[in-house]
Amino acid sequence: MRCKNRSGLFATTHRIFSSAKMIKSCEKQEGEIMARAYVEKKGPLNMVFRQIGLVLCIMVFGIGFPKSISAFYEGKTIRIVVGFSPGGGFDVYARTLARHLPPHIPGNPTVIVQNMPGAGSLIAANHVYRVAAPDGLTLGHFIGSLFMAQVLERPGIEFDARKFEYIAAPARDTPVCVLTRASGVTNISQWKAATAPVKLGGSSPGNTTDDHPNILKAALGLPLQVVSGYKGTAEIKLAAENGEVAGGCWTWDSIKALWTKALETGEVVVVLQMMPKRHPDLPKVPIATEYANTQEGRQLIQVGIHDINDLTRPYVMPPGTPKDLVQVIRKAVNTVHSDPAFLADAKKANLTLDPVTGEEIERKVNTLFNLSPGLQAKLKEILFGK
Picture (cartoon, rainbow, N blue to C red):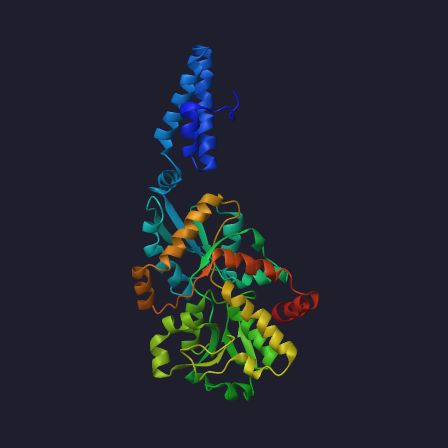
């Protein structure tokens, strides 16, 4: 019996189902009921059983798309896999989102954060891509500079950035370099005149804590050395306080949240910004391009830093996650980003919000794969020594 010959109650009820997956599920159950009806009640009555099957399906799955999604998420747990250790900027953003996300998702599921640090969040990125089930219950939150690392063929990348499902980002990156007063370097002039490389903490190549300083070294000629291997910015902060390194380079929004008192007392100082224009909070701190004396240097900063800023903090879902669930989570996260309670919580945590939509992130990721071969080769040499 062909599905296209629908009429009466069946045709009416079929139109109620806006989700293709739901229709398929119902038609399967309907077919099973029909088979039994055909064996037991050959003849016109089988159409009655067919319609009963659809009614039962409506009773089980609910009428329409919203109820089916609500039933799916009710009692479930969504986890946000964060690629850095607890206490760092990525962790704070994710936990703030997790506290406010449940009521914005049909079914009010529980949302938890799972920290999976290592290799500058590459372990988490690979996990979300290769291991996590595409069932609508997993989000990843790792550093988006890994997308550039894939373009530059960094070893260890086990994902294709073009296949993730992009949800949103809470903010555009605002990278700066911050140094401790104890290091003896508290402004860009002192840094340029330093007789020994200034040590900066990093996570791993492919991470902005490593990549941005190395680009600055090539573009501006700054004397610096990246000490890599820290699990996240919280560890870099601790290393700077202990004198292991002089400081580090990562987003201003995270630094002001993690290092509030030290900034107020002058124990740490922001010496350089890596944004196209000065941040309103830092009107007296110079931007990197002011010290780039060559066209190549300015181009490296633009492509290697400025173009990555919008991609730094993405929330993603595994490839193959059903599109209807992706849209539900996109809508929920976008709604949270304008929720007054969330905004108040974010302000309390000193988190700056400048959201980027999933669609915008997807477009920008795709453009990374169109870099000229010459620029790719230069960045690869700077960032990975090849």
